Amino acid sequence: MTKSNSKVALITGADRGIGFETAKELGLMGYTVLIGSRNKERGQAAVNKLTGLDIDADTLQIDVTKRATIQNARDQIDKTYHKLDILVNNAGIALADDVLPSNVSDEVLRKTFDTNFFGSFAVTQIMLPLIKKSAAGRIVSLSSSVGSLDWQSHPIEGAPINPAYAASKNGVNALTVMFARELANTNIKVNAADPGWTATDLNGFNAPRSVEEGAKIVIKLATLPEDGPSGKFINESGPISW
Image (cartoon, rainbow, N blue to C red; front, side):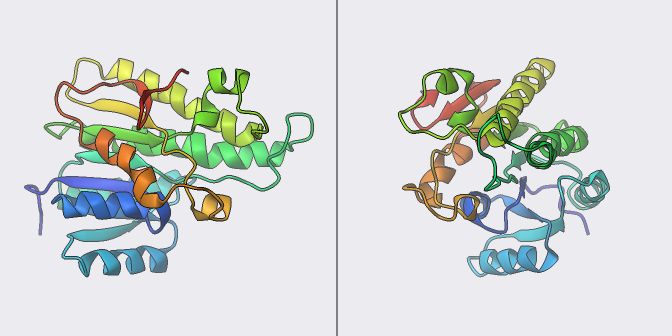
């Protein structure tokens, strides 16, 4: 059975945190939300919570570091919905031993980039043919202010450097600009969102912002009107310098 009339949103890493909150808010707005999750059980548990709120939701097993799982998810979406209206690249990691450039390990750099950079790229590239079928496709990638080279050059006193995480998010910003350039003459908008320092399992819930606050800019960029921006790095206050 197909559901080609539904407005469909895929959120990776959506079984918890900002991803789950984004899925919930989009679901309450009437979107069919697809929970991308590495863990089948966690994904289904998230879907159960959403359906309890009368949200149309389903789960797709996606490991963003494994292209085969992304391609399989793409095929399932194509078969059921024929298109994808919103893609939120939310899945990401931050490792505890991401310290200073002088002593961060190759392993930490590679593992962080595999998820945050290459994972975001692979999901966007593989899902793009379905997004092109949407009347108003939107791609939102979760970034961070630490990914801004300007911010790194003028940091707040005491702010960590975190080279692996920060560099991977700067890479996400670069991909955002390049995809936006490629798609400039289409109805697709591509942006990077900075949710701010939000309490999630990524930081051991040690942050001042709630997931509801962190998801606000993601929702805004995912539902931009026709005259909205593209190729920007944005938080709640507006564009952030690269």
